[in-house]
Image (cartoon, rainbow, N blue to C red):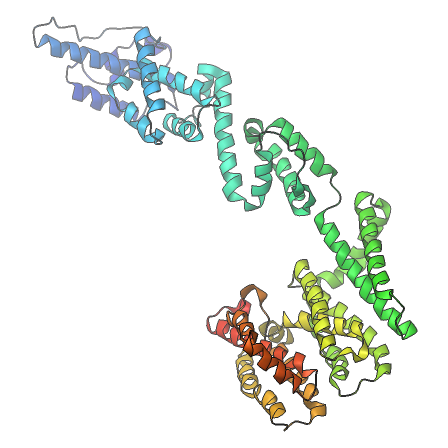
Length: 566
């Protein structure tokens, strides 16, 4: 449709593309036909001309209808008029204001449907009313009191995203403010539901005022995520940053998160490093002197912890940049090949098992040979380090820390069961190796060793059928007392290799069977353990029961195709 100077000389009926008529249905059909080729977003001026012609034609048809009842008829012939931007009459302003207030105060949580109903009413047939309503809606959407749902409804109904130039003609400042708040709401929804890792950081930034102190700054992951989110907001969501975030809150978090150097993770790493140094100190003290120094254990523990915490604190607060750069280059040249390649090879994953099995056998012999402690301590230390290094492929750092803590507890239980012949250090290192393998046995071990997983089920059934024979042979004295602990350990070790301890999905029976030891049942169990030919069986027989329970659980999950728990 032509626009510009030619439209000033054309009549309303030529614009509608129909002959002068008093039939409102014909006028509406002509108007609908012209709307298909004259869209407001493509040519706002031409659409405005078409709308004025439509309103004039309806007005003439109404007067023709009144003439049929006695009023004089107007001339429906061509009437050249000057068409331009309609001025908002006082009546149009009043009607638009009433319609807008009615929509704002009574949309009942459904603003888009209420707006569509209002647009279909007779009041919106007037272009001036519609234009004034849109102006009021723009002022409202640019303010803070407008809700996100109402702003979304207005933007969708009037298609403001495609008609930004038209909005700027109405009010440039309010147009930018309204669309900025609309984009901020979309960004908030995207960040909240599209990136779950940003939820905590987003909640911190949306606080109305800066906090006096926040314990979240001790979390290294949170601090990094917060700084990453701030950078992302500046580059990708500036409207959200301008409309939703208090500048003082943003400045506070950015300043404190950027200056943070010491985190809870650093303290945990310091404690773990201190434990490792403590174990190494115990090993070398036993090797070098052969006897304990008075209060050496306490002195070594607190000394290694102080050394670890002070070293990590110094590196975190005032890092030596030149030395750190050299260490980074050394790591990239010499250590990355182990961390990213060789660590996943079968020899590094399984190679430590053979020396561990050989070094564990003397612990279960009937007599302890003290000279063997000089071989067991360094040998088991190397096995423990290799076991933790291999387990780090599939276990997070907190699982490795749990393995070390459970190793200390298990070593205490072994010491009370009569395993103290080679010293506590040997027991701690032995338990760390045992637990590291217990979390990675079963199907992962078979896959890493290259064996066919189909054999695993048959081997587990064989082990389960023969496991009850061990306590029966001990009960009826069919097994020599000197070999009872040795044979029980071999059977427990084979079961640990065939099963996998999955702490994330413990079987319910693991929580039930300790209740059997309460009241009278506990006395019966204690009497049974006291009657055993070897005190060390009090540790090995419960271990055999635990391995049996986990193996049954692994087989159940294998039948359910839940291979993660196999």
